[in-house]
Length: 91
Image (cartoon, rainbow, N blue to C red; front, side, top):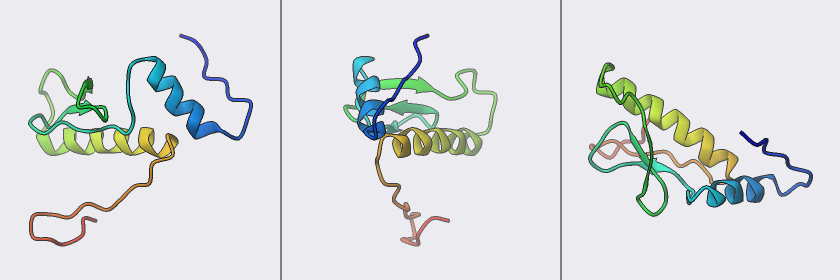
């Protein structure tokens, strides 16, 4: 695998461009109908957490959320607190 080498302060732009070269458009997000599936900005599947369905859905969702947060943050996207169904801000 090639190294991601960044020689300028354009780190986020270079990071986003590296994903784009792989056919992945940031930011990443959760798929609508599969807790462990992560999709790109166009809705294309990028990867699935726990493909063998060995973990609880909540654990899978949290793992996916952490990976999504890390990738999107490195891409220069700002994290925004989600709201739960009752309208209260998420933790």
